Image (cartoon, rainbow, N blue to C red):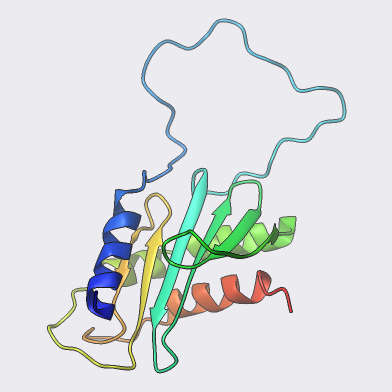
Length: 164
């Protein structure tokens, strides 16, 4: 299977994931709700639902990684198929807040909606983001304008999940 076919499979797999938004399911609300135990703190709201998945693939080095970050800050970095776990950890509350701000930035949403022109470039880095409303694919080449927000998001995620 060629590299293009592998990338296409990763894209299809990610887009098949549920959008993981915070919207409650339809139906009756239970009459009894559990109350938190004394001293327990609720997780910080994230603005991206229950999880964010980011894939970065391509470039001259041919590196590919997938990050999955949950609303409580837990993260794991894997190969794009999600089978080989490379690292795991937990974001700090501040890092989770920064991530939420980046994911809810309207400029990022605009980049995710940008139209691509046909064409290929061997050194392009493709980004695939699945995080509720901010979801889409940003190809490494063929766009009319630069895509600094998705690059900044990927660099931020890579930095805060680096395990040295």
